[in-house]
Length: 95
Image (cartoon, rainbow, N blue to C red):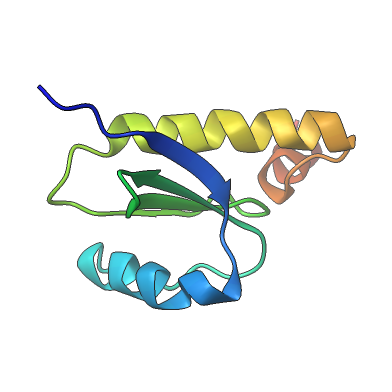
């Protein structure tokens, strides 16, 4: 059995074609702004827009766990930077 490495990183402008492909596969809108990208073996499987929590993923791959990892990573980043995500700010207002 081969193991492909998992990478979670910030997307760059060079990732726009990959993000557009994921969005098209997921029948979703292209993510913008600060985006985290999950790759397996160098292939993009899922992405998350940090400010809104919106996600896109390849529906032909088992990517649900990757989406959860992206959410956890975004929450940790927000705590480390001392700023809540847009979603957390909206939830705080509603409470």
